[in-house]
Structures are given as C-alpha cells and as structure tokens.
Image (cartoon, rainbow, N blue to C red):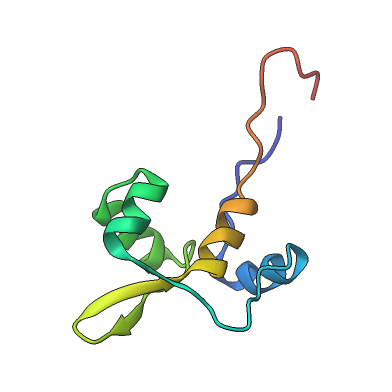
Length: 88
C-alpha cells in the first residue's frame, strides 16, 4: 500500500526547486483565492499550518497571503491517489 504522507513545510523549498517554481518575483495568493484553490475551510488550513504540513502565511498589511510557488510545490508533492487495478 502506498504512503499518504503529506509534505512538510521543510520539504517545500526542495520540491519547489525540483519543479522550477522559484520565480524571481514571487506571486502572493490571498486567503479567499487559496481556500478556493484547495477546496478546504480556513480552520483546516490553519490546522495544517500549525502542524507544519502546509507553508505558513505571510503578513501583508492587515491581511495574510501565501507565496504561490510554495503552495504549488506543496500541491505537487501530494501523493498520487492509488486507483483500483493499478497493481501497486
């Protein structure tokens, strides 16, 4: 059976480099955009950040934002879902 390990925040920079996701000028993602992209609630996202399994947000004025390349690297590092008949 395959592992369903969620990538840790420490793995993000390595994965980002592997996928060429280190832009010269990083794009920031707002909370509403991130929640829509991931399809999870803010309490879930908050829990992931507290556990160290999701990149921490950055303060931007009175709001929070995430660096898009870190989020993309986290998504790219998620385990591939096993399908029936794959023979893994």
